Amino acid sequence: MRELPEDKQLRFVKPEERPTMSPQLARRAAIVGTLSLALFAILFFRLWFLQVLSSDHYARAASVNFVRPVEIAAPRGQILDANGQILASSQRAYAV
Image 1 (cartoon, one colour):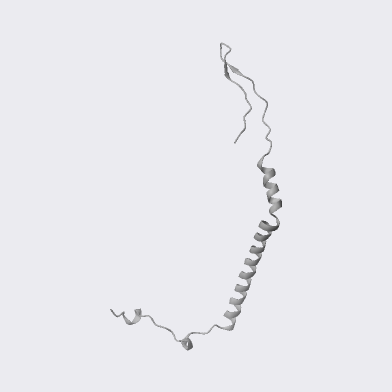
Image 2 (cartoon, rainbow, N blue to C red; image 1 turned 90 degrees about the horizontal axis):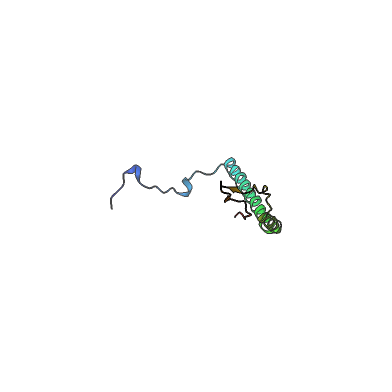
Protein backbone atom coordinates (compact mmCIF):
# COMPACT_ATOMS: atom_id res chain seq x y z
CA MET A 1 0.00 0.00 0.00
CA ARG A 2 1.27 3.44 -0.89
CA GLU A 3 2.43 5.78 1.87
CA LEU A 4 0.96 9.25 2.11
CA PRO A 5 3.20 12.28 2.50
CA GLU A 6 3.87 13.37 6.09
CA ASP A 7 1.39 16.30 6.00
CA LYS A 8 -1.39 14.14 4.49
CA GLN A 9 -1.24 11.24 6.93
CA LEU A 10 -4.00 10.69 9.45
CA ARG A 11 -2.97 11.55 12.94
CA PHE A 12 -4.86 10.22 15.90
CA VAL A 13 -4.80 12.54 18.87
CA LYS A 14 -4.38 10.94 22.26
CA PRO A 15 -7.06 11.89 24.79
CA GLU A 16 -4.54 13.70 26.99
CA GLU A 17 -3.40 15.83 24.00
CA ARG A 18 -6.92 17.01 23.08
CA PRO A 19 -7.76 20.55 24.10
CA THR A 20 -10.27 20.64 26.92
CA MET A 21 -13.45 22.68 26.75
CA SER A 22 -13.25 25.91 28.69
CA PRO A 23 -15.91 26.51 31.36
CA GLN A 24 -17.26 29.48 29.40
CA LEU A 25 -17.66 27.36 26.25
CA ALA A 26 -19.27 24.57 28.26
CA ARG A 27 -21.75 27.05 29.77
CA ARG A 28 -22.59 28.46 26.32
CA ALA A 29 -23.10 24.96 24.92
CA ALA A 30 -25.39 24.09 27.83
CA ILE A 31 -27.43 27.28 27.32
CA VAL A 32 -27.79 26.68 23.57
CA GLY A 33 -28.73 23.04 24.17
CA THR A 34 -31.30 23.98 26.80
CA LEU A 35 -32.86 26.66 24.58
CA SER A 36 -33.00 24.25 21.63
CA LEU A 37 -34.63 21.58 23.77
CA ALA A 38 -37.16 24.09 25.13
CA LEU A 39 -38.08 25.34 21.65
CA PHE A 40 -38.57 21.80 20.34
CA ALA A 41 -40.67 20.95 23.40
CA ILE A 42 -42.89 24.01 22.81
CA LEU A 43 -43.25 23.15 19.12
CA PHE A 44 -44.05 19.51 19.90
CA PHE A 45 -46.64 20.50 22.53
CA ARG A 46 -48.32 22.95 20.14
CA LEU A 47 -48.54 20.35 17.36
CA TRP A 48 -49.91 17.79 19.82
CA PHE A 49 -52.47 20.32 21.07
CA LEU A 50 -53.65 21.12 17.53
CA GLN A 51 -53.85 17.51 16.36
CA VAL A 52 -55.19 15.80 19.49
CA LEU A 53 -57.09 18.30 21.61
CA SER A 54 -58.37 20.66 18.90
CA SER A 55 -59.15 18.07 16.22
CA ASP A 56 -62.94 18.25 16.76
CA HIS A 57 -62.96 22.02 16.29
CA TYR A 58 -60.99 21.85 13.03
CA ALA A 59 -63.07 18.91 11.74
CA ARG A 60 -66.25 20.96 12.26
CA ALA A 61 -64.68 24.02 10.63
CA ALA A 62 -63.65 21.92 7.63
CA SER A 63 -67.13 20.43 7.20
CA VAL A 64 -68.73 23.89 7.38
CA ASN A 65 -66.26 25.18 4.81
CA PHE A 66 -66.82 22.17 2.53
CA VAL A 67 -70.18 23.38 1.17
CA ARG A 68 -71.07 27.03 1.14
CA PRO A 69 -73.72 28.93 -0.79
CA VAL A 70 -72.57 31.30 -3.51
CA GLU A 71 -74.89 34.01 -4.76
CA ILE A 72 -75.15 34.12 -8.56
CA ALA A 73 -76.54 37.10 -10.40
CA ALA A 74 -79.99 36.82 -11.97
CA PRO A 75 -80.30 35.20 -15.40
CA ARG A 76 -79.67 37.58 -18.23
CA GLY A 77 -82.22 36.13 -20.59
CA GLN A 78 -81.89 34.47 -23.94
CA ILE A 79 -79.81 35.52 -26.90
CA LEU A 80 -81.73 35.14 -30.15
CA ASP A 81 -80.68 35.31 -33.77
CA ALA A 82 -82.49 37.32 -36.46
CA ASN A 83 -85.03 34.50 -36.96
CA GLY A 84 -85.86 34.24 -33.25
CA GLN A 85 -83.91 31.02 -32.71
CA ILE A 86 -82.23 30.68 -29.31
CA LEU A 87 -78.46 30.94 -29.58
CA ALA A 88 -77.68 31.04 -25.84
CA SER A 89 -79.75 30.84 -22.68
CA SER A 90 -79.16 31.00 -18.93
CA GLN A 91 -79.19 27.74 -17.04
CA ARG A 92 -78.44 26.71 -13.44
CA ALA A 93 -75.30 24.65 -13.02
CA TYR A 94 -73.13 23.46 -10.16
CA ALA A 95 -69.53 24.57 -10.16
CA VAL A 96 -66.96 21.97 -9.21
